[in-house]
Image 1 (cartoon, rainbow, N blue to C red):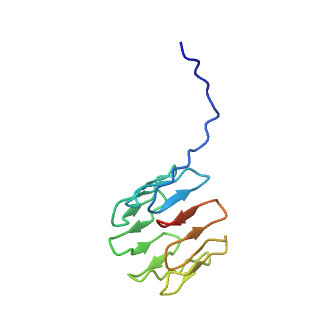
Image 2: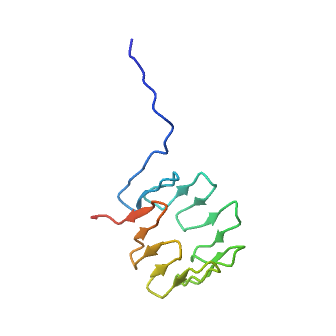
Image 3: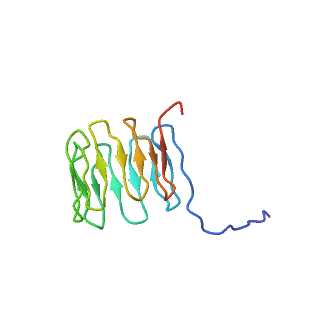
Length: 118
């Protein structure tokens, strides 16, 4: 008989070679940018997302958020809470999120995204 020990329920970190992510809140991202978040985000290969807070995006990363987030094909973001972006996907949000043109993310909440080879 094997002895099975249980550990506290802590969201597991999933790290994959494309868009490996670590987030304290439990986001998991696979090689094709599919994500399932405890809060209800789902994303397919073309970055479609539907969040229970009404975030929506299409194949070209168009976002419409009830709080005012909007972006065009070139990832321009403007959020009423202070998010801004230029053509090169540089983001700076008052809560500390930053990313460069390679979609590297560092967020106070713990999300980190890397590309193959990092």
